[in-house]
Amino acid sequence: MSQLEVIAHLKIRPGQLEGFKTQAAEMLRITREQDTQTLRWDWWINEDGTECEVHEIYTSEAGLVEHNMHVMEPRALLFKDYAFDHRMSFYGDVSQNLRDLAQKYAGGAQIFSFVQGLEATTSV
Image (cartoon, rainbow, N blue to C red; front, side):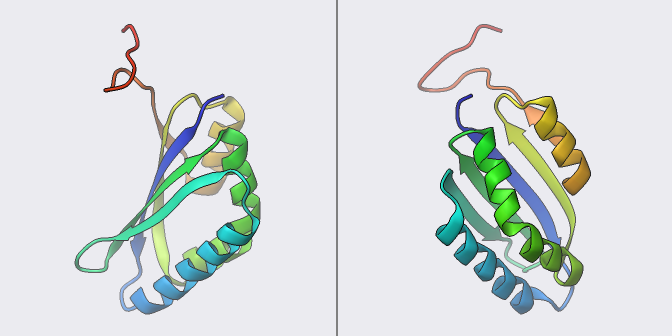
């Protein structure tokens, strides 16, 4: 399979922005040290500090699975203490296995299929 793009959206618990940032930094440290197939994992916080998006790109679906194994425990702490309302969107071909994992760990995900872009086209 080709690259997999993901956008995770979450809300930050009131009064927990600094703890959220600290936990995000820890997760980024682990990702840098352990992941071998993560190409992008960028965290974005809105202006009032209440919502976050994580823009992710993996070499393949297996890269996302590997990444999730590495950050499972610190992610659980993130949602326990600092964040809620986790939603995910996948961009690309997504196996049933990944759909099942998204359902189990993130309450499901929206799946988007590529239609057309600057570099390539697909017949509709």
